[in-house]
Length: 225
Image (cartoon, rainbow, N blue to C red; front, side):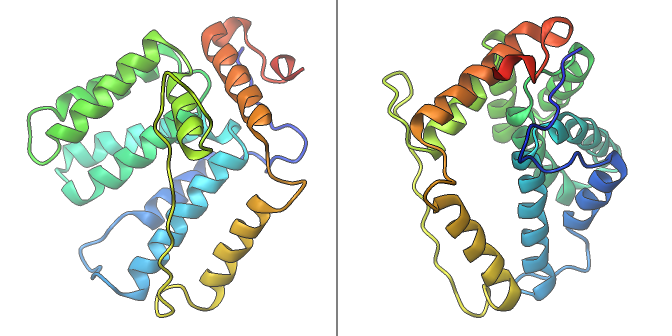
């Protein structure tokens, strides 16, 4: 059985009901208005949800299951406001997941294919359908590309790198929100706590091995040695 149990220093595994509540909290509602504290709070909640997956990959597979169920529900109800944020979060969780069961992969792939015809989802649906096919052909490739771009690791086969600019408006990033973001940035860049290029490459190799070995032959802790 493929296990992505948390190693030392990881956050604890989040129960599915809590993940469900977190997803419901970030979904847009008809009563929401742009540039209001409610919208800013949803952004913070979405960031917190991503951190739960990033800090413990064991949460990612559970999150994928919850998200695809919510996407199928949103599709039945034609809830267009919910589909895009759910879909983006789903793909992020898939990238973090070392192994996806065949049944779950098929449900996600079929859902993305159904987005190829209706506007305004066709472009995003096509992009994510291609990513899913690529990930199925080369397990772990999406995770490798994400880490290469985010950490600006030199790679002749994937030259894209990301740069993040934070334009911090005091009216938006004020009070506790600003302190939380500042603390996260400082923690990620603190000497001795941040991972170097070699550490990130080890993460990529471990993730790729887990993805390639599959459910029956992969054990997360066994691959970490």
